[in-house]
Image (cartoon, rainbow, N blue to C red; front, side):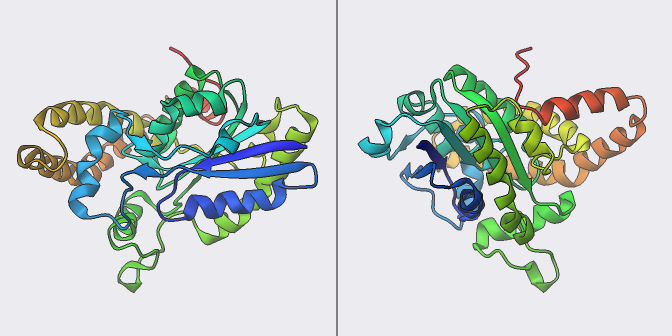
Length: 308
């Protein structure tokens, strides 16, 4: 009997729905599946209060861990043949509950010397978050064997509007009755069951060498070269903001909140002014950068980690 552990953190339930659909084709008489949901202490309330939504930025981006409920002894003391790790992206970084897990002894015990498949579901920018994930897994001596990235397929500025509506109102519906629904589409959530079959086949064969290639044949990862540039630039700027704001006090303190307010306006400026400029530069350099884009697409679609 093969033992699989599904570890995840999800506020909206979207990641759980995707993982459940994958489970439907992964499970068999030969595969036993256990779930471990990460619960932060204290929990993050959903839908978000607007102030708290922005005030979590510095600690989230700087990967500062917090307390969380550990798994039961039954989960913790079992050796797994595969771990599937489902996560959200907060501020271009794996969500703070996931980071807290990855930086814990619990993760060392569950993931060390174990094959891991990562699954990210987010708005659109996940590239650098996954690079951070790869580094954490490497530090735990985990073996990343597969990756699935499901995103909101609407254009960037539309998804900015719809995701904010979802996060602050808690409703995955059409904003104003005219915008598309936010998040991963229902069609892709339902269709994610297709990923369970190649994972099960690799698990039963105890051979994960071709798993990512087989997942890619099912469109598990689609790399947008424009968003690669935007993600890279965003991480540079977020680093400056996070390191500045973290020095202004603890969450909720008035001095810090003034800077959080400035950061909020910066985000609006970055999304509506800087991002279009980055897109124009991307178009102007499209042909000269063809070889680099191909190389990046191959790398970011893989489970390899470039240490440079």
